Image (cartoon, rainbow over all chains, first blue to last red; front, side, top):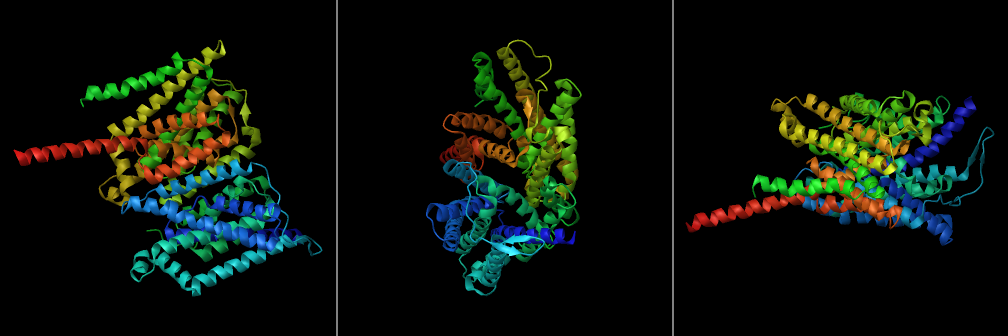
Length: 293
Length: 329
């Protein structure tokens, strides 16, 4: 029993790393732009496809492939603000946006998902693992790819936190998240910060998509179910709260993994949504969220 | 333009359009027309809650799905007539809408949208996993169409069209009546524009929000029941979040917040996407995504807004004419 629990705990940590990459990106974008990126999962899928192109089609080594695919998704993410969000913001002016940004990113999600379907087809593409072999822990076997996921996700998120804390651009992002008008008045170019934030958030998703590709295969809708779950996670962590999203990701992933011992696995996905709805009933602003205005 | 002229200008093409599938009774035309009308009622129901009252639902397909399954289960396992199945779906979904509305009362904007998305996913999971009731991933079939239909397939389809048109148009009329002719309409709009101000003006926002949830869910469920009886197959995928996205796309296309805009938008967009099926199955969904993106940015009021903007231009022209007349006179 103890060994089983340990085994699922390890599984939970691996999954938690992916959830964290994904959810931190969503919550970062929300914190800075006040927009929920419904198309986040499509950037995740895009990361998987980019890695497939780099490793299988071009035959590049895994490390180079992962860096290139993440960079490619970053570049795609950079386009979102100037091409889609800025025009809508400009048209709206001072009027309340209501659901328009949600509808916009939802449309982007449908557009990207089905474009990938049209270009790549619906097959499940296999990507070779970046690392083979594994660690034998006597009671269970952990493949190196899983270890790699945890390590890369952990280091990336650490780098992101350091970047936001100490780098000039990172500080600018935090300033805009706190108060856009005040940030603008001290000379921070809002448009550039918004563009960079979307690029960074999407790149995190793209990296997650590339890391998990050898385990999950790549297909157009690979990210969408994850998007919905990541919304639940970000709500638990409090929308806009990076550390909250990270902690909530690990908790949800571990609870999900352990739940297999108690409830049938086909209900696993209900845990995140169920917890989200329960938490919102008790605390409408999430576990670690600030009070809603 | 006088009122009679306007009624004639809108009414004559509408009646002609509705009668067309009965005159040009090709089975395919009828098939498309019936489904377009079902989507139209579904889109109008979404608009009542999300466009008109401003309570964004991202899981409306959940209500549609519950309505469809209610109809299928009642007719298949209890052998009840469709004329009981449809009102039952209407009432049950209204109750579910009320149940979802209660927790949602405390939530606004993003949080509400995400909770309704979670609701839709839970409906999907239940439909997939409660095999003894819903038939699991394969869904349910063989429960028959609208009770009382017989004869050759074409005739059956024509009658189905008449039934669906009758019910969806009645639904549209009821929704329009509620929003335009009862005190609920202004209350809904006030909640959408400023909830706190609405409450300060003495509007019982709790009551009206729950009313919007209940009515919207009930009509979404009714459209689901119509779908079940016409298609005669329900599976979990009808409650997928992509279906919710599609209905929102239709509403945006038609113009949210007008009720009739989404109704019309759904018919047009469904027609367009079905036509695109001849190009390729994927392209119709790409088109839906593109329509959502382009319309939100460039035509945020949808097709209905084009008419409203025109009226604004006419008004401005009238005012200018009046001003110049006043200055010259």
